[in-house]
Image 1 (tube, helix red, strand yellow):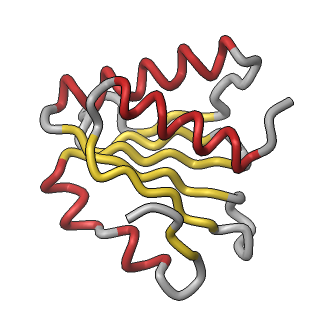
Image 2 (cartoon, helix red, strand yellow):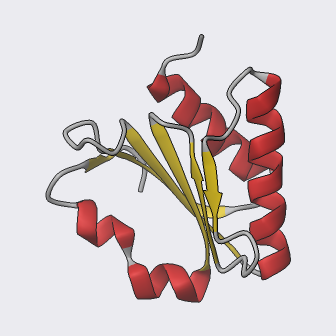
Amino acid sequence: MMNSKDFAHKIEEWIDNKKGTDIQIIDISQSSIGDYFVIASGNTERQVSAIADYIQYEASQLGRPVKSVEGQHESRWILLDYYDVVVHIFQKDARQFYHLERLWQQTGERSHE
């Protein structure tokens, strides 16, 4: 089974395949939430939803089914929880509003900028 760091980087690759932008991986291993956040943006609700669907499909092919999904109906911010890796796919305006990167600057280190 792929370790959480490699899985986070694989998710980054899948997001890039679907033309997601501003992809960041944040180490949150000092928290009880998981090991990594993968945060990315999409331009439209349709793109955000397509990115999330693609990640879920590709991860299931690796034997990594999603634990839970939130926000799929609105598709402004979709959260995919894979236990050790939590994926956040935002529309750009929602990402700017919530700015998760700022919240995690104290506890995590960004590996991509």
